[in-house]
Length: 124
Image 1 (tube, rainbow, N blue to C red):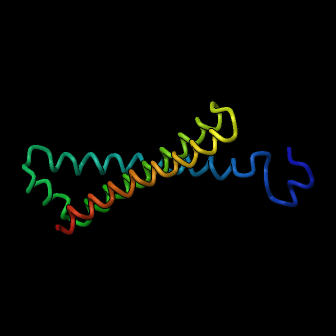
Image 2: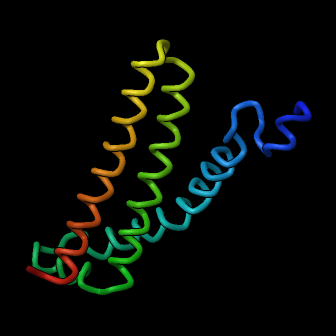
Image 3: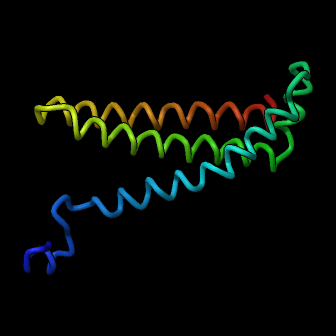
């Protein structure tokens, strides 16, 4: 139930729970076909040497699927860990520090993986 003031502000009791809920469900749904696509790319590179694996990732569509898989997975991971931190970590200082580290870690993992895919795709 919303108080009249919350209705005016457009915020629920948690201020962003609905958006978080739907974003987590959306990334979970997106991860299903992206995982299948990622596994197809991995299967195409299976048994090949490094040059053959690079040739698989040099195809733009395959690189795009892998990059989307990594980005969607990192977002989904951040959202899931955020819920765990908010539910089980007590103390506002520790909670804020862990939430910031969670975001930085997720962004770092996604950036490193996308950089690796781009480097393999475009050579260097």
